[in-house]
Length: 423
Ligand code: AMP
Ligand code: GLY
Image (tube, rainbow, N blue to C red; front, side):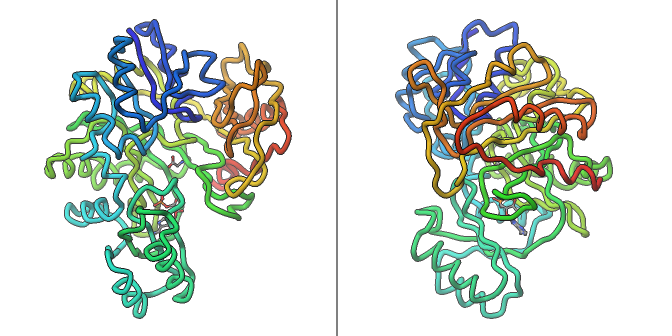
């Protein structure tokens, strides 16, 4: 069969690697892809928000299955455009991708269906939000309602910071129209865990857990980024936590979406905080995490195409979703200065060191060709992943492999997976 993957980051490289392993797939395309994905797929220069062009391509090439990677096209309704043309596609429709696309929606959903999350209020009017801050307790969390590249969340220590935050989100529109509404919610403390899942509208099967490192600097300092590294599984996601989440969060979310007439097919990513009162939902995403996919997918057993097709067909209950009994760590190699400003266009060398090594993966995020050289082309450049029998072993291997690759302005965190030692 012919498969098209939409997107061009490290997540899509990890998806592509998994799809490529399927004996059912004889031709793989990726739009737009990147210099690393180009090794295993034919890259097509169509941007992820060019829905009609993307669907034209799928029709012309008689693509059998399209897998959507990023949040923006999902929230924008790319799946609806494909379905209207009878093209087979994996991901939630626009009316279900709202689970990620609107934080106000997802908070109201959780409240209505009794899914544990932080206490909150939604606001359309900045004056109302400012009034609310008068009697709130601090720290407090402000969230732009819409998609904001993972940056629309402000944790404010006191009222002065929060007032400034409301102004920047709702009045100065720091995150654009994402800030037309906002959520103000209770600040929670605890460990964060990411749990991704496959969903077919009724059945949910969860993947192995993971933990991201969102801040730019060692020791969780500096600005929020898209993610500087991950490990999987999380030792903090214990069988007790799992049992609680199965009872109170996972199936309830799928059932709630169905009850709202927003049947969800695709990936639900649960961002959880393990508070002293039990696990609570921080956020939902409607797609694979990046760089969570880079540590979860290399550990997936079996054929991802079978699972994806089962989600589309509603037969996930009969389809196994299993993971290897090992661990993986991903260290992101970024351009120094990310997430603010950074130079691009530096040659990357040493990539060939990954060839022929089953336990090591170099997922490309921001890379491009410059003639026959591969150069840096983004803030997050590569996701260096290694698998090992244990988390500690995988981490040592991943850090060893970060040394194989060289480019000017290479930057990484040195403490990815440090929490493993505390488990
Ligand atoms: P989100 O995009 O909603 O996951 O938020 C980004 C990050 O902000 C999360 O990964 C948390 O570290 C932090 N965060 C979000 N909501 C809260 C909250 N209610 N309490 C404490 N931290 C939060
Ligand atoms: N790594 C977090 C995300 O993909 O949203």
